[in-house]
Each structure stands twice: as C-alpha cells, then as structure tokens.
Image (cartoon, rainbow, N blue to C red; front, side, top):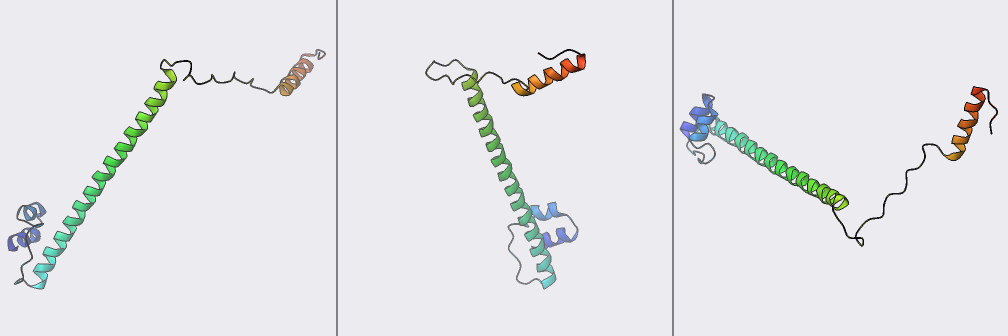
Length: 121
C-alpha cells in the first residue's frame, strides 16, 4: 500500500493502478492521512470504472434498440414492396384528394373570371 500511496502523492495514478490501487488492502499501521489518500483515490477510481461500465451498457442498449428499429423498418418496407399474394396484399391508398374543395375551386374560378373581365358561368 505504501508504494501505491507514494505514486498517488507523486500524481501518477497509472503507477498507483499498476501497484494495486484497486486490489491492495488498506494498511492498519498507517496514519489517518495516508489511509485517507489511499481510500479517496480508490473510491474515485471505483466510481470512474463503474461510470464507464454504465456508459458502455447504455451504448450497447441504445445500439440494440437502433438495430431493432432498423429491422422493423426493413420488415415493414420489405412487406410493402416485396411480392405478395392477393390474399396478403393491403388495399391501395385512396386516390389523392384535390388541392381545393369543390366549393373553394368554384369561388376561385369566379374570382379569376371577374378579374379577367368575363362573366362567370
């Protein structure tokens, strides 16, 4: 543990990890300051490692969901464009509606006729 604390006091976390920061038990003969440095550094590393693991799990979960969505999209697109028997075909979409309702189209035609100086029919 003393080598770990010495590395921590030098600011070399990598060396402390190599010397067993996460696995070395605390020394019961050390003073409070030495033990506090060791415990704080170990706690920080453990929290960082746990956060990294949570991040990786989240990334895996998000990727899995994205893959599932892509598969559903492909399955939906494949069913719509692929060959299908008459029993499994979906009905065709209704014919597109005109841009204007008939009453609005008639009013527009009358306004255009008046503007052109013609008598509306």
